[in-house]
Length: 375
Ligand code: PMP
Image (cartoon, rainbow, N blue to C red; front, top):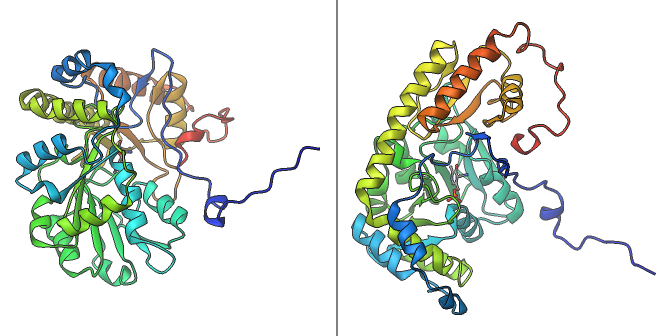
């Protein structure tokens, strides 16, 4: 007789629902502004490298330390190669850091709202996560150090997501100088912003700065991220990572994307210009739009945000809606191409002009719709 299933998981695994990534639809014809991908293709050098890649080489394992791409990042940033670790996207590095620095007696700290993967990783690790509410305008509260006294790892997204703002640098420096544990500054969106915190790694041996190729380098599908910190921190994180965490093709193409700086600069400039078009357009439609230093905007529609999100979805435009207390009157919209922005604004105008369609909570068929965005 077949035995019935009994869970052997640790309760930390059984007791959480897990992180739900944004929807990744496979159908054509959808305007996808929900996971902050870049609307432009990766640099032409990436396609060239891919075309010349000999599949026979895949017989072999990749370089466990991604040496060539780390060396290029070292040359670009002025840090030594032993200050850099490569990851399978920056989510991989977040997992490694959580496993290195948190456990049942070493809590994590992060802000609320922020990237919701952080508390999920802490929960999986069996670590407490101290979530510090941002102020009403989504800034860092003055008593942040007091609230995080117990924590051993403090993860700060700068620019923050989903809010898009750039916390004041002096406030972050004070945290780096006075927090007694590790400060991990997640700079996933930094290339779209006016400054960065890399200089803190030089001054403070407890600071990790983490970046990704998923957003500014148009390589979300490739899975490449890196972190820079004191060589002792990197040495420990390397012990914790999978031996071959970055695939061979990923290493090769990530390196190729670093060579074409002019292309990179052009794409960033376009996204920044178009971000202003999106912000202005939304403001003209009476949205409250937060200042953004990222490739997305966080905006409160003049009517019910969830219904606006669902209305867009029915018209094949995906944005992100987070139904938490602090975020439920906003949607997060990625800066797409100028054509996509124009369709979004035109559709939004239509939605808003449809009488009674936006305030009527409950008048929508919600079965299944938007479930994957409910985090
Ligand atoms: N940090 C933040 C703040 C993010 O929004 C994301 C994207 N979801 C990541 C890290 C992870 O990016 P990736 O794993 O694609 O490098």
